[in-house]
Amino acid sequence: MAEVKWIKLMTDMFDDEKIDYIQSLPEGDSILIIWIRLLTMAGKCNAGGYIFLTENIPYTIDALAHKFKKPESIIKLAFSTFTKLGMIELIENGPIFISNFTKYQNIEGLEKIKQREKEKLKKRKQREKLKELPPENNKEPNNVPGTIPGQSPGTPSYIRSRSKNIDLDNTVVVDLTIDHRDDNITTNYYKFFNENFHPITDFERQELESFEADGLTPGAIVMALKEAIDSNVRNMKFVKAVLHRYLDNNLLTVEAINADKENHKRKNKDTKSNAKINSKAYKPFGE
Image (cartoon, rainbow, N blue to C red):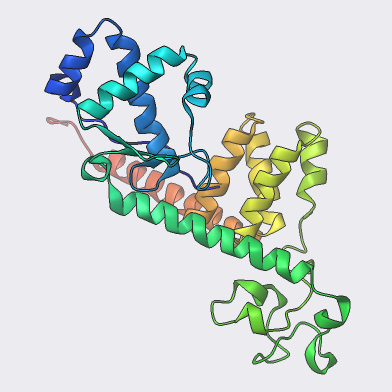
C-alpha cells in the first residue's frame, strides 16, 4: 500500500513568530506537539491540508484528546490558539483545515501518491466486481481458452485486467485465478509465509494481496519472501520494501526478477574485473 510517509518541516520553524509565541505560553510545549501532530495527520490524509477521520467523519475534540493522550482542555486551548493565529480553520461539523499547508509541501509528490492510491483502489474494485460475476458470464468467447474479445488465441492469459486497452466494465474476462507466468515456482504465498515465517495474520494477508492487485504475480511475492529469509530478516517491513522495489522497477514476474539479478551479477563481475586490471596496470613511482 502506497501512503504518505513524510512531510516537510522548515529548519527555521522555531524562528517563526507564531511558533515563538506559542512556546511562550504556559502550555506551549503541549500546544506545539499538537501542532506538529496535526501537520503529520494532514500529510496522512493527503487532502490539501484537510484533516478528518474519514471523508464523512470529522475529528471531535474528545477523539483528538484520546488520540494525542492530552486533556480536552489542552486540545481546546490549542485549537483556540491556532485559530487566533490563523494557522487552522475549523469548519462546523466538518474537517480541520491547516492554512497554507500546500504552500510548504511537495504538492506534486503528494498528488502522485494520491493518484496512485486511487488507481490501486480502482483495480481492487474491478477485481472484486469480476469475482462477483455469475459463472455464465465468465465463459470465454468461442470456447477458446485464454482469450478475450479483441485478442488472438495466442494472447497470454496474464494480460487479463492489467491491459490498459481493455474496458473491464464491458468485457468478459478470463478466470483471474489462472496465471502461467510463474509455473516454475510455488505461487501459494500464503502457504509459503505460514511455513517459513509464522501463521499469517489477516492484516499480513491483505497487505500481500494488495501487492498482487498492483500487478505483482504470486510467484514474485514468494521471491520477496525468499529474499527476507536469505537476508535473515523475516518481517513484513523488509518484505514490503522488497515488493515496493519490484514494483518501482517493473519487476512483476519471477522471470523478470531473476533476469534483473543476473544483470546485477554481470555488472558486479565486470566492475571487479576492471578493478583488477587497473590494479595490475598501476605501478608505484620508481619501479
